[in-house]
Image (cartoon, rainbow, N blue to C red):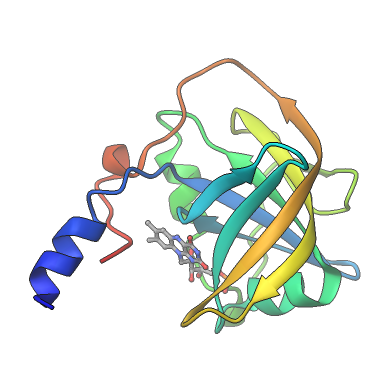
Length: 158
Ligand SMILES: Cc1cc2nc3c(=O)[nH]c(=O)nc-3n(C[C@H](O)[C@H](O)[C@H](O)COP(=O)(O)O)c2cc1C
């Protein structure tokens, strides 16, 4: 396989950018993610690829819940904020307005919509684990275009 072709081809997959809210006991965290998709209508399932060396992965493994916060066009600064690895310490929620949803994970007040999920299965995958969640609650804050990976100018994939 030509590694350059593999990288270029995989980067042709269209992606949005969202913030995944997680919890473990009383501890909250969130991280920016792009490898997400719906994978079933009935039951409503979504799939998420989560870095196994991230703080959020251990939290999802423990609590078996997460919330997908969909960001709107123009909300790159919010996505940038949640790129910071939780292992570095500090409170990622300082100055960020949020509430706890049905599954107890943080729902951002910014963003355009949210999807709350209970984990049904985790496949170890590779450097990212494949987490399948069932949608148990959802809501829309405002009807706006989602933030695309293209708009951010970032790359994640290849
Ligand atoms: C554009 C972009 C997209 C990303 N998408 C994902 C993703 O889909 N899954 C993931 O686990 N990490 C993704 N990351 C990396 C996480 O945001 C990053 O590892 C973060 O620090 C994890 O936070 P945590 O350690 O507090 O959990 C992405 C990073 C960038 C720059």
